[in-house]
Amino acid sequence: MIRMGKKYSHLIHGLGCGCLSPEVQQASRRLDDLTRRGLLAGMGAAVFAAGSPRLGLAQSSSPTPKILFRQARLFDGTSSTLRPNVQLLVEGNRIVSIDTTNNPPPADATVIDCADRVLIPGLIDVHWHTLFAAVPALVASTGEPGLIFTASTAEAERTLLRGFTTVRDLGGPVFTFKQAVDNGTIPGPRIYPSGAFITTSGGHGDLRMLSEIPRSPGELSSVEEFGGAMIADSIGEVQLRVREQLLQGASQVKIVGGGGVSSPRSPLDMTTFSLEDLTAAVAVAKDWNTYATVHAYTPRTIQRALAAGAACIEHAHLMDEETAKLIADKGVWLSIQPFLSVEDSVPLTGPSAERLHQVFAGTLVAYELARKYNIKTAWGSDMLFSPEMTARQGTMLTHLSRWYTNAEVLRAATSTNAELLALSGPRNPYPGKLGVLEAGAFADMLVVDGNPLDDINLLNDPDKSLAVIMKDGRIYKNTLGT
Image (cartoon, rainbow, N blue to C red; front, side, top):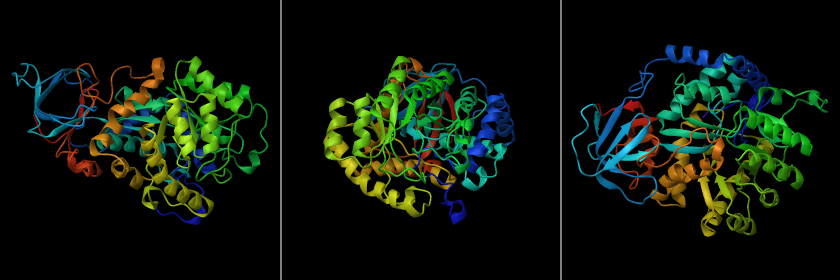
């Protein structure tokens, strides 16, 4: 974990969902300027070409026509048990068949013998920040876009090699980066982008410099210029900013309904948007046939988001029993992160540290309430600003074993998270089945050396436990040979 002095403590978000310091905003703005000029993909190609080779990284621009996984034990993403002696055939980027007949492989297929290892769907993280997950604040504060891009590119590959083949990005100018991943320039997970999250003056994510206050009509602050957050203080502004993210390709939009852990002037207990504002934001998302997710910790903020028609609540660590029951009754999704101790966050000081400990205490209660009321619960890690922290992405998933069985943990990070992603409807950038292993689904899968249904902690050490990583029909790691 990176330890930073007091001088830089204000740069850290911790659990702050993409809230950046002025220095980081400046760096991000310069990075985004480059992406807007179409240089992102070219830089990515240079970084990728110059990087040291990794075992099993795809070298071809096209997926292998046919790949057969043989002698596998299959976890399909929905069940609680393994199917033994399975063979699974991939053609292009889709699964075409699964059977237990042990038929001879097609003559033109590459065969991977799993030797009784466990085959599972690729993992999904529904609360991620692609551009800032592993960029240390000291690097970001230099304002050097090349360094920021290089760190984010390297982290995208590491994310994939941890077994996470899909992420939902909840804050950052990631649209062009996503294109570079999709066209194969950058190895990384599929990205469901939100773009800039929408907040209010004084809300979580409003990290303007004092010289930028008050707002000037028609002028954007530095945080808005780089595309990490947009400030909206009227219904008209809310509608405009939401539409702008959707116009750029957002698969869903993120609205900040309350305060955050490390925003210096946004107390955790505050509520930002009025009911009318939130309702307007949700309505725009619905008009685009997708959904709005609302950042909210406290009962008051959560209940306002529910009244506005939000389809998903992010965090909710401080919810009470009445609020949990209301979430369940309305059938709204809860996207929550199992923060348990200081090991799960970058270092924070002062009021931010106090808020962080509130979240730790609330985590235990929130998950118990989610189980009690059978809330539709998704999992995300929300790791930020430290490659040491992002390395704990799998550990954050295994924290769920405190409340769930190993099979339930695996379902949470596969088929359950995929259900939440599917709420994007026509705005889904990857129309097709994710999070499951079945005929017709995307060929995103992992071969695990060991049985995660017996030992979920295998996912804490992906370098050792993941023998094969496939995304979209391409093999990015293979220690088994053919």
